[in-house]
Length: 319
Image 1: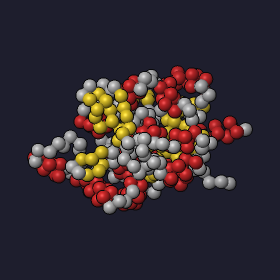
Image 2: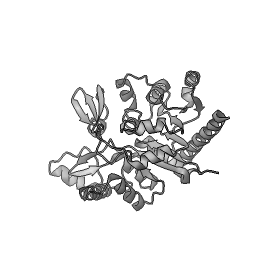
Image 3: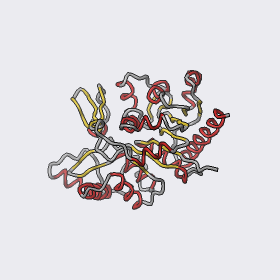
Image 4: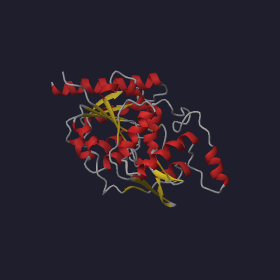
């Protein structure tokens, strides 16, 4: 019997929750994650990788569970002093978190790849689920608003997602090269799971890296997406504004339109079950189940059911 190979595409809090669910499931040894690096930015001369750090902190049980990001038991003495010195401190970086960014920046200046830095940080926090990067190059999501072009962190953190979104771009994407590890993982996947992450700026940024989406389309893997919407609303973050800016509906149909070229199945919440018939008419298998993931048990239960549904549906299609 061949070894099962599962890939999770993940970004943001939704991606971290899905990763935690798989890490605690029977499928942990079969899973690798490809994370989003396009939210990365520089603060106080330090390179910060929010989505990757949220994955590492969550899987290492170091995350601040109330916030959904940052380290637990955090203090902010450095940030307070920077504020007293007149520096912009809207990006909340705790003292423990700053150690991560100092370490990453020092290694980056030494020429160590982002992938290698991620592996070292994951090891430090006892993370056993491999985290791969789609590219080691710098790609930065930018959001066009009424205030002009902003970095994603300026839009998300400083402006609290309050501004209307006019357009989105991934700066540096044209020259970015995919990592061989990500391409190999996709090519060898039996099941590819798209986490309930923002389809435009989390998953979309991964797919925009040259060769990544094409690799998924040609992989032969069964691709299943967990919708980030519940009752047509986002659980957290600006996915609704991003979908609207891309001319997509804020519902299961809009999520489908982001992934339709390679999608085999969708997982939608019970509150969106009215979309089932339409999705099936598009040729998809559909799993209708609670998707909120409020606690560890719900994370593990949902992601186990997602894998089991994918394997059963894949087997049925092959029959």
